[in-house]
Length: 300
Image (cartoon, rainbow, N blue to C red; front, side):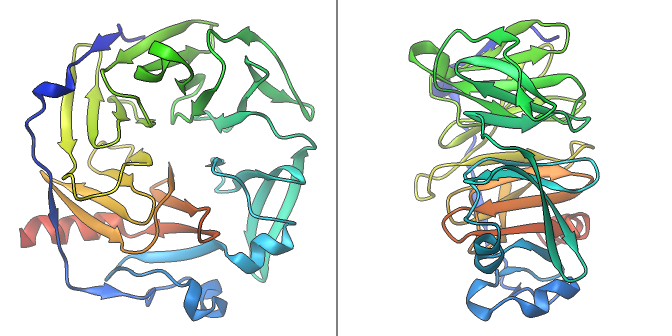
């Protein structure tokens, strides 16, 4: 467990340059299923990036409605999401998708840990999905808190809530410990982790939390929209963030637009980045980022 850390964002002086790349494509390097995606639903991505369309407006309609803002990905690459039909596990197949209902009700918030366990918040209680029901294991200090997934087994993060809680990241461990992981002057909007560190985002800044320190990583220019989500590679060599309409990858002190017209919520699993836009009702998995990063570093 890491000690709680605090930082004053007023001292952040790292400027974030948005590095433009002219080689855009409209999903030319696509998985086989993308050939059936209508042109209006396709995504502009950097040349060389591989896209697989998991959800589209047509597939969302087949599910009985689009999922909400929260989703996560299991270790075997299934997507867990919720809509009016409950909590669903969605698997891509050769001819579309298959959805299995995990629970009839949807929790107030949910995420997965590194082993794929479904963690939940229901009625101001932290718990876990067990036999189609959400347990109420630990009472939470504030209402309105949200879960952020972890790549580590037995770990979850909570953000949001009321008053000072909105400025904190809480970490919950499988031994029942709930601790403040970090506290910053601005509201926290997203969290991601790997074995090396925990990353958190406010509306325009990204910070890195370790056992000994909390340090600024990147500050977005004021011209960009607010950050909505974060994801980080397991080897700590790539950090991704999204706004409502775009997805970026950090390369040094510059941010490269990875997806020009799709943002929202990010999740990382097995070296694949998943991007869900509720507005467009599109969920894609993105691959091939290692090559893109190598090219970006050689070009700068």
